[in-house]
Image (cartoon, rainbow, N blue to C red):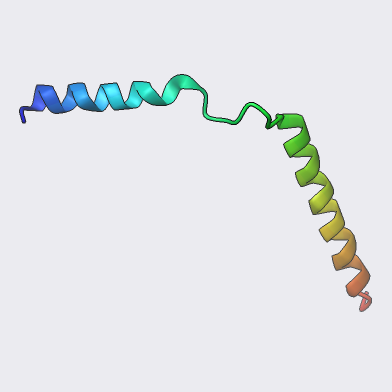
Amino acid sequence: MSLHTTAQHLVTLAEGGQEGGGHESLSPFVTGGGALIALLLLLWITTRFNRDR
């Protein structure tokens, strides 16, 4: 394989990943909101166990 052919294959491979990247049913707002709720719940649990202060 020559350098030109290898570069052409890499460009073709890189262009194939531009079609989306996510599932249609995944909403960024729902995913972010769920992560926020999970982190707030973990923060609340942590502060309940830390009674030393």
